Image (cartoon, rainbow, N blue to C red; front, side, top):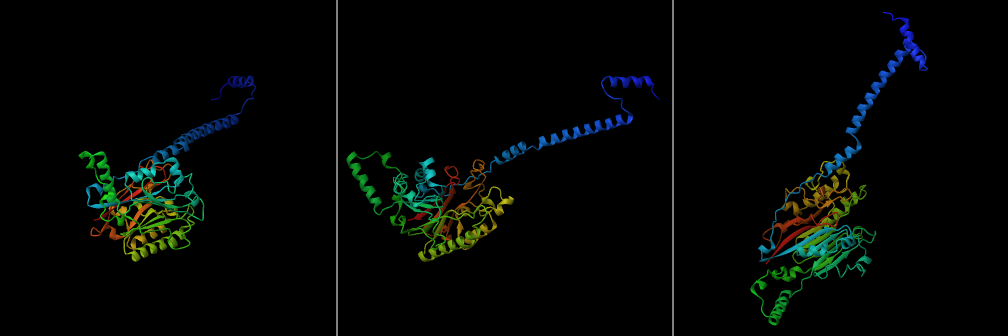
Length: 412
């Protein structure tokens, strides 16, 4: 039906009173179309806004952070050897630790090394990545050579990089044992008892020191300490210190890192690793005793040694490339043994390194880069020297690595 003109006129005059021109039907339809389009656009904008809230960078970051803080479980390790329960033999204890800068350790944790030496009654303490030059070792203000662990009874040896400052470097602290120690100790005690009077029974029945248990003290005295692989291309970076004992040889190593861009991958796998294996084989053959090399070997050998095995970036990351893992496997295939995995074959979450930059230590998102690699005869119960236990000390702070410990029985 057609509406009365008056009604239309009334509407038009109302529009005119607002200063607007009368609109035709086409104009009204066009306006309605724009309004509908505007509603749809507003709705779409609202939907997108909801999506952006759901997947906002802040929420993604929070979710990632929550996932990062999820703890990677660490299996408890059984104690495989108790020195006090084996009084008829001597327990020879070796500690290895990448300190990521010895001066920083001494400045921020001044008693860390002394505490380790005392707690584990260590015979040898091996450090890697000391970042020292000779000038630091001999600087009386730093109190390193002739001071560090001197009161605890250790002789010290340092190998420093001569090609680059503040780089690499290794150190070894060897417990002093002198022939006649036991007789001197007993004589001194007898003299003091005669002066002060005999002690009560509960004071004299204390457990003897480890050195008093050794049948032949000469087995605890190094025959030689050296600082070279015998190849000029390797020996300028201070990466090795070898200590030859009468019954075995050990080498403290800081194996070259392949680098963030893997620029040293070929050098590490095709030169260093091969020359190291030849050196250890030659030492074992020439001396006729088992060998052990230890320290930061800069490789996470298997999936068990990495918290995020399977991550795409690992194949291109130093320490987890297929080339490094294969090179390490070739050393084991030559007849040598990863002591920790031999003694703890199924232990999960046992790592020795955590990235400090991304806060990986608290959630135990780490890698096992530190090892004791041994001749098979060190696991032969019929031999005079037997490796009895190997474990990790994850609660020791001061570096992005933690110490590892090996305990060897030296039989009477």
